[in-house]
Figure 1: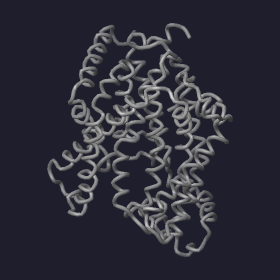
Figure 2: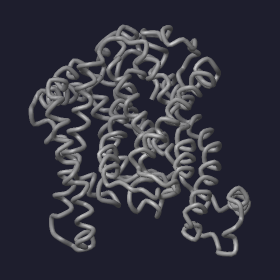
Figure 3: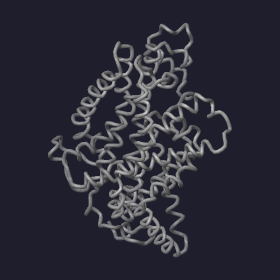
Figure 4: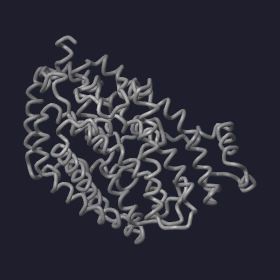
Length: 435
């Protein structure tokens, strides 16, 4: 690689030579965020009222799992996009713009397109199966005379009549589409940035100085929440939208995740700031936990009182401020925690990190299938939910181990073909950290 590829648009060298440092803590944190998605979706059928949009609602519901999902939704993908920004700058230094585009097309666009073509029909069948089991076929627009039609035949009819154009859904793969949108914006911004006057270097030095001061301040969570709250006000829902219904960029989520991506980018410019964030991880997590109930149960209470529909001045601003505080408390808390406890190389954690991308991509059909299977079983959610995780988790890891890790799929997702042994998982920097 020539020296020009190792220089950023601001003319500065990267903080460390490519290949010298592997951020084991961020690898582990990204794996945590992705694997938490399995637990997040496995809990969805147990949330009260979920039958209006999920495949099926279990006969035993749980307010607790609803709060758990509410908390996870506030930080899980936010952490992912922050780490994506960190590694995007690393990759640009290592590969240059052309290499970056080729790598991201291979590692993000190909899994998005191929994954959607394979998974979407399966999920349509599972949704129809769940609706049939739960007596909710009318909700999906199925006429009563077809109520006894096998779900597989309804699925064939769904695609034969081209209904998927009317009911397009990116499913859980929406995050790959959102990431692709942010990558395009990043490259456009960098192209414009390069033609600006040389004063851009002085501007970046000031940004770095201000960002370093922010990361070292006890008010970092409040400041970042204040910068984020306006984007929450633009969302269609109270909280964070899930932009899965269209290929057109969704402005509010693009602004939110783009901001988090930018924070990750700035962190890679000064990776030593991770240690400053790590000093206050306990306070961040405590703040996040304390705000789960006010933002979760509080939103339900506002719905019951009818205040969501009323133009109550300042009410949504207050909620958005609390939600943003919860979000950044969790994001910075977990970031700091993993920097503290997972800084050293570990073959086991490296294996988990390598497998997490595949597991998240393919987990939803298995999880939803298990939810449909147990939904009408007599019993309490306290054993049904763990049962789903106990069955899904080993199946997903085994699928990675035998179908992906040492195959061409592993090359596509992880950048190289790994031996199956956990102990042989390398500790050195791979060709490209997976997103």
